[in-house]
Image (cartoon, rainbow, N blue to C red; front, side, top):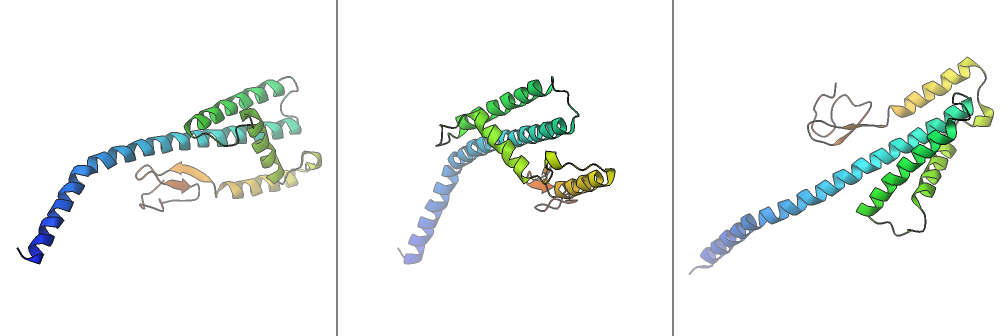
Length: 171
């Protein structure tokens, strides 16, 4: 038998083995993607709860929310955030288990307040200053994620008119 024939037979054996092994790898890939999707969904929900907490605090500091309703709404959002963090911990346990879920939500909310340029003590009195703050917030919002492409599932931004991955129109 010639050397070329031996290589041809070996190549056919490798292709057949890869063909037979493919279903096993596809199933494992699907399981990992399912966990990733669930984790991604929970993280997005966590971000929404943190944003809601920040907006609630901001509205309370502006006087839009009565003193009696604020603690109840805040406690409900904290509980919802804590439940989401517990589910995330079940999927991927965090090494620092000493920090409980509610403390982590409080920490994230405080970090968001520290990042924002509006200080409750120094709120603007005039309508022009408030309009300026709204315009700045809208500018920062345009660079945020708007969700996922309906065709390929990749993340897209609010300002995107077409998917950066597949080119599908998002309007």
